[in-house]
Image (cartoon, rainbow, N blue to C red; front, side, top):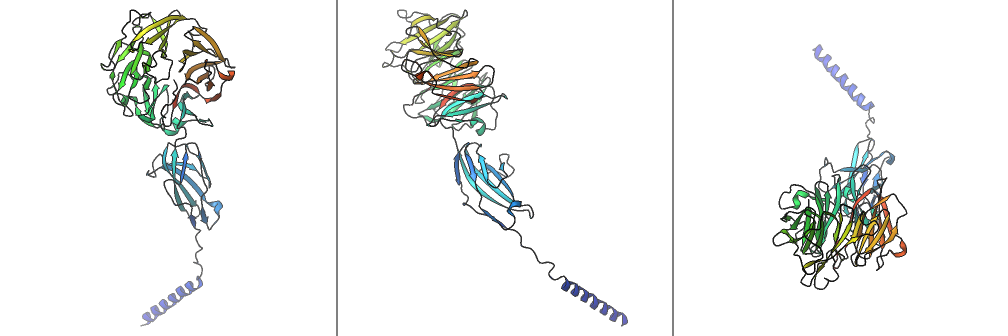
Length: 499
């Protein structure tokens, strides 16, 4: 009994102590309110912000915070739609409260994610905005150039009322590095108005869509596998009905006008096309293996000899001797084809140089039946012509522009006369490309001792002289310029083309 009373008393005393302790600690567990983050702003949508590449995306976030805002941490991310959080395309683009980001992602639709974190409580809130990125350099002169580190890019001189340069359009739209590219090509016609860009490399190549994004490797240009992929020229007429590609000296015809086209088996024959003349449904080439001129027989898909005209021909079209062809072109717009209306104006011209450095001009003509004949041949002794670094025929006159040293000349092949039309102030340059559309002349001037290049544009008079004796515009900031090709946004009917 005593033990029972003793245990009862002990339990009672312990209970009292517990109650007393709880009573004394009353108020020690009052919770301080947690700081709250609330993000506002526009309702998330696919086009909260629409802008062009290289524009500045600015977002000033709307949010409230009940604590000290100076302690908050901000993270801005950009990524394509519908990607997972661990996708390598998720980029952190800023850790500042206000977003200012120059858009350097490929053309497309994106999400921009804002994360605001309170480091004291680890509470985080987020908000997503939709961003549409459109192409900025949709129309203009594509400039393939090599930078100091050996890598290349395609920059664009925008052709509008306020010309400017957008640098790095290839690298902005691709993850691959561009190297060893030698030329650019453009397939753009009324049937393929947005166009396809072709990049020719020393070995290989690839094509790009109109927004400069990678489209396909050179292996997929052809119906069959090629021993070597080394493209040098590509052409289509205005309507896209005829398209040709020269690869490793062989001529290929497009199987259909569908874009991008697949090119058929090489045209049969023993030849190596080193210079070429495209005229809609007509293709002529200079065969460097046999030193002759050939034409394409489209029906038989083979290179054929040009039928001699014993009455009219003044040179042997099938054997002009051991000569290198410098230029094979005509003096009208690039896509003009011979017809009964223009056969008197259209003059295919070839310039060929022998082993002794002498250069000869071979002029072709057309009868009303459009049969080719060899009209004339003579030696060209114009200053610097045989060692020129660039040539182009006028697109509306019987003239040939050429560059030698730091000078540009125009050669009147009808009267066999040449005259200097411009001298650059810089002497340490090489003029490596000339292009014209008939009313303007473009020249690429690369530094000889520095990895720099500039693109000049000149306005032409009807005589071929340069207006005001100076350039109309100059664009620099490039590496060494390999090639320049014009790209329309959408090719208009009756467009004036560059060649």
